Image 1 (tube, helix red, strand yellow):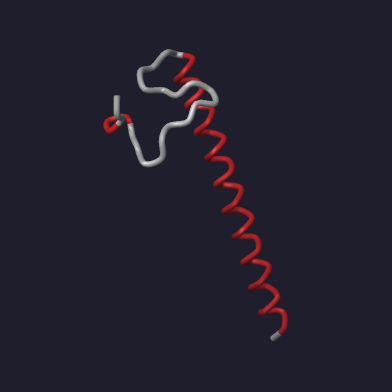
Image 2 (cartoon, helix red, strand yellow):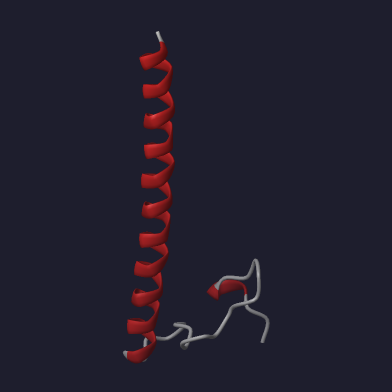
Length: 63
């Protein structure tokens, strides 16, 4: 009875760990792709450290 409860908590913590790792890995991968796009001079790519206004995408930028 106790082992089932402990097992559930361990599995839940493992799920949180793997989900967090996946989010961090996805963010790092996204940053590398964005940097590579900027170095390749792809139109609309942000330069390293450049931020786009919140809620605006390439098609809705105000010039």
